[in-house]
Each structure stands twice: as structure tokens, then as C-alpha cells.
Image: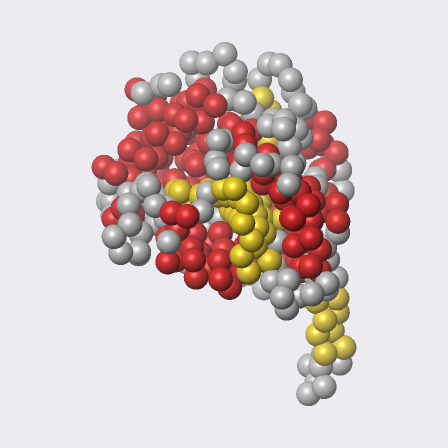
Length: 364
């Protein structure tokens, strides 16, 4: 399974940066600082090009995702580093939907990859659990399901209003994400894959998930496969997270489950994600959102953005540099060189400085 974009096979890697809104601009600034520290002495350089798409630009001239953006990204860039979008001045969130959901759909980023790793046992709300117990990934189908926007409203605002939201599942979409999960497990030497649906109630769309899973799993006899309904899976993840290594599910369930996993591992401030199409340009982001209430106060945790940057480096086959970023975050968390949400006393900028200095002094 290819793991990196081929837009720039040799020479510097070209990174498109969309800081977005709120704390997105703050954490991405720190992530770039750490990325530069990790790659400064190596043979592969990173060049960053920033795009000002976000609420400020939308309010100024109505720009969300320009029509030529996708083609520019495909031809000129190797990866996208994304901050966050969302601003109370845009109550419809139109710019956020156009930019993030637009890129996921138009670049066909069908994999949403969310690692769930407990770095410090003190951070989990679960009793008597340590770092060995919470270490799995959620692989979420990222382009179909209930998030495609098919549906409508009839007699909106009246007592007789009807709202319909269509759940779209294609054989191609379901099979490729399930197959990706098994390939991911094999590549990373993970011995268990659990697929989750609600086929006992959603007897059309999720019956497709169940049937395709039963067919695909027979091709991977070296990997233990398991099926759980989503309500059972949610209970089991809380009861005994150690039983899971790779979880694959639909767009909506994956969205919910990955945030549950993030909370078990210390909160959204430590949660990275990748929006991936193997072998093509892909997008990497922290998942904490724009958090407008703390924007501009030097309070935001940059660790999620740094871990997302590590995922980006993996995608670009810069694995030693990726591991250097992860080692820096793990050390910072364990030694409390962090922002207040993780028990430290540093601000956003100071936490980023510490991580960059650690990477500089401890290259892999």
C-alpha cells in the first residue's frame, strides 16, 4: 500500500498550510516551528506556502475554497497542514464546510485516520489503566455516509416540517476503507481489526458494510477479524480498550468513536488526524476545532498539531523525523512541559519552543 504523495518525488517537499480560524493559526505556527527543527539537518527540506482561507477572508470577500485550489494542490504540493475552521461571525459555518469538507470530497480523501494513544496514565479518566491498554486507531470512511449533504427540508419552520438526511454507502467506498484497514493492520504489524456498523437496524446501507466485511476479511487470514454493532463497540472501548488495535467504521460512527477515544487518551488537545488518499496529496490536522473562546490568549495546546505533523511526515516517508516529533510530545507530556490542560504551566508559544528545542537536541 503506497504511503506517500508522488507530487514531488525528489527535492524539497511542498507543504500547503491552511491555518484557518481561532486557535488553528496559533497551533499551526508552533507545529511549523517544530517541523523546521526536525528537518533542518536532514536531506529533505520542507517548503511551506500559506493560504489565508478562513473566516477573515470569507468575511472580507466571500472566498471559501477557490475553484482552482484542488488542481493547484494536486500539481504543486505534497501535503496539506490544516489548523481549524469555525468562527461565531459566520453562524452558517459555510466557509468551514466549503473548505474542509470540500477538500475531503474533491481530493477524495476517503480515509480519516485517528490514532488513540495514551501517553501518560494520569491523563485517562479510566481507572486502573496504563499506556499499554489504550493504543489503537480508528479508521473512518471520510467521503460518504450521512455527511455527503444529500437530503432536504420541507415546510421549514412550520409545525409540519420534515427533514430528510440521506445515508450514502457505495460498494466501492465501503470496500476500499475496509481493505485499507486490513492493509494498515498488516503494514503496522497489528493483529486485530474490528469493523463496526448498525446492520441490525440500518438493514440496507449497513448490511452492505457487514457483507463486504465478511468477504474482505477472508483475504487476511493473518489478522484476527471481528464485528461489533456500534453501541456494543462504544461500551467495549470504555470497558476494556486494550482489546482493540484497528477499528474501521462509517463516517458518522467514526466521528463519534474517535472523539470518545481521544477523551480516553487525554483529551482533544492530544488528538491528531489524517485525511488520506494513499499515494496522493493528503491533509493533516488536529481535531480540537477553532476554540474561539481561548483564541489569542496563548492557551491552546499545540501537541495535537505537532502529532498531526508527525502523521504528515509519515505520509511523506520521513519516518525518523516523524518519530522525533512523537518522542518530543511524549516527553513533554510525561515531564509536564505542556499547556495547562495537560497539567503544565506553559503557554502555546512556550510549549512550541520546548518541543522545537527538544527535537533539535534529540534528533533521531
